[in-house]
Amino acid sequence: MKKTLLALALAVATMGTASAHRLQSTHYHTDEGRVVMGNTIAPEVEVTYETDRWGRRIKVTETTTCVETRVNRRNRHLRCLEEETEVTRVVDRPAHQPAPTMEPRIQRFIERDNYGRHVLITVTDTCTRPSWQDGRQVCYRWERDIDREYVQWDRMDRDRGNFDFNGDGRTDGWERLLYQSFRDVLENNR
Image (cartoon, rainbow, N blue to C red; front, side, top):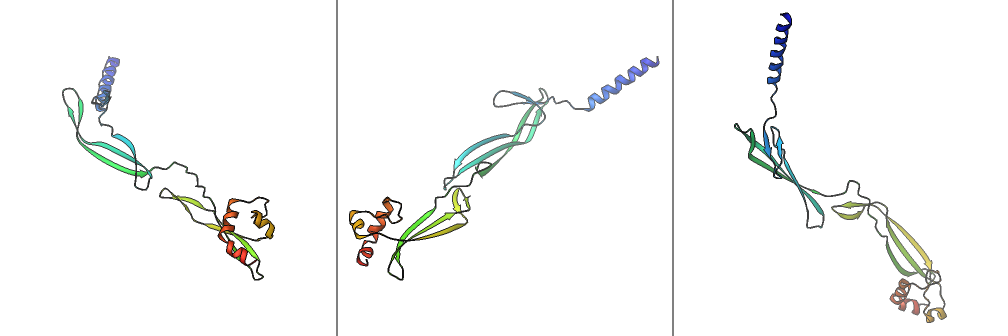
């Protein structure tokens, strides 16, 4: 008899604890035709990309959340009564974007020193700290290197078209262009 009463007490106790926890018996239907069991409707997230006026790629995230729901008592079907939509726009960049490579800026010109000799001056500006800003390459630190070389040639080489200013044994396009630009200065002051 004690065992029977004990079994009945345990049965009543387990039924009481089982009914205390609400089962997820509500459901809703998705646009794809799936049935999802649950008491809340999952937010819908849609990601698209667009380009702004500076040519940057913008990631647009549109999140639609159900803020008010209703449960049909007959079939336990969960319906959304009111939705709230939030749109965020962020410049799309890779997680680790490598630093840009910037070509050095080179300027060449000819001067005359105190003794009347022609000096080829090459100014090279090299970017030592390149970075990105608003999708464009910028440089935060430039280093300048100035090389001075005396222009040495004789009249015979110049007449034959040999304008090898830097002495590397060949005539480059920039050397011809430089000679043509300063022809009057070079020929009149020699």
